[in-house]
Amino acid sequence: MLNNLDRIKDTSLHSLVVGAEEAASWIQHGMTLGLSGFTRSGDAKAVPLALVERAATESFKVNIFTGASVGSDIDKLLSEAGIVHKRLPFQADATMRKHINAGNHLFVDQHLSHTSELIRSGVLPTIDFAVVEAVSITADGMIIPTTSVGNSTTFVSQAKNIIIEINVEQSEMLEGLHDIYEPAAQGSRQPIPLMSAEERIGQIGIPFDASKVKGIVFTNYTDSPSPIVPPDEETEEMAQHLISFLRQEVSAGRLTNKLAPLQAGIGSVANAVLGGMINSEFEDLQVYSEVLQDSVFELIDAGKVNFASACSITLSQEMMDKVYGNLEEYRDKLVLRPQEITNHPEIIRRLGLISINTALEFDIYGNVNSTHVSGTKMMNGIGGSGDFARNSRIAIFVTKSIAKGGNISSIVPFVAHVDHTEHDVDVVVTEQGYADLRGLAPRERAELIIENCVHPMYKKQLRDYYEEALTRGGQTPHVLEKAFSFHANLAKNGTMLDKETALV
Image (tube, rainbow, N blue to C red; front, side):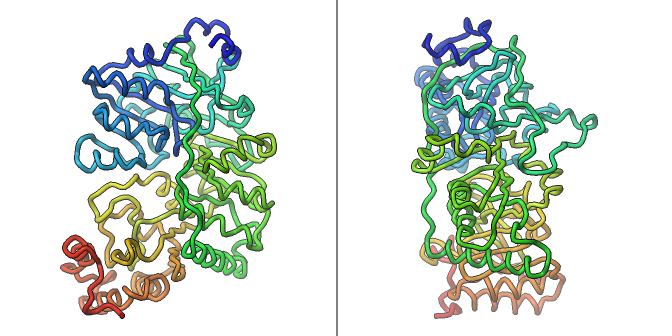
């Protein structure tokens, strides 16, 4: 371990090096922890895992705040150990999902740009311990994050105590990749002076109060690889529909072949759809997103993307080996920022982003459900999709038109849970086609969505519903007693398909 002390450039902190078990022993029942990590990268690992070990002989619960989902099975193990009282603002673990939906611990689903504001303003509990992963600590008192920034900047500035995990598996070449900027308190802050994706406005690391550092733990864990699946026929068709829409925007003079800065949400579908641009005519592109997935680096390698700004880098194992094994080739094309900056409405609106996010389902009027299966069961969380949808130049939602072998239609009469209202949704895309909803009244939206986006096996069923709804009148026609009939049929019969009315 002594050989790793050169990662702590401020030698006055050398005496604070401890083991993970000792650091975990300081955390007591009822405390609130701010853990680094965003979409399986840059997450604190050693101390949370030591907490899990401690839970085998001791009963306690803590609040777990992060940037977004974390890797290394941390959420799974914390859930199984019964440690979690409240979790926010996002998670993506199947085991934790089961515990949340069973009511075993509380989950607060938040827009990712809001968490730091709520901590800074004192609405959320004070952070007792910030536990953040770092590459190193500089001589002038800055923590150099690893592969994500997340909410670490706010956790460090607001916490009573700080534990720094220095991960020696992460390359010191990451230093210089970050742009750390924290807004002042609301009511006294200046405009965030970011005018383009490649611009830098902050420092290379997270400043901290050395008197709050309780301990420094050395670790050697790699990030968890992304569970992304390769593009399939449906996602390739969705990509082509998206490209057709963008060509329409260029033809209308609203965009050029450089488009506008792109954002794509986490997940295989959004990753695949964005990756479909590799063989398009669009070039000299920029990305301003919350997470950089495989497709962004494929676009960089293809010469399509010249710069990418984000909060996190989350890659498959193959792409992780390639990027981190050749980081010098990408350094001048990347920057990592705090998530309240990557997801900040002021910047999203100023830069005029094109956002691409994934829906669980949407309805015939364009309302989108991103979070709740059948309206009640939490999947992952809203993440940053709301930050981008409300404020982007063009808010696009993508999903396959059917799921579970056709037993579920992703387009329904009325979504069972609303995350993004029709007012925040500009374009919806499935493998069947796309619907540009901008400037359309509800009745125009319904006709276009049913015609262009619905799978043939559900088209007649939705047309029949809409035609009956029209007889009831109204600005947004519905048959209230049948608005959730698709979901009710799924719960009762295991399929949304009404075999009497479905097109065979």
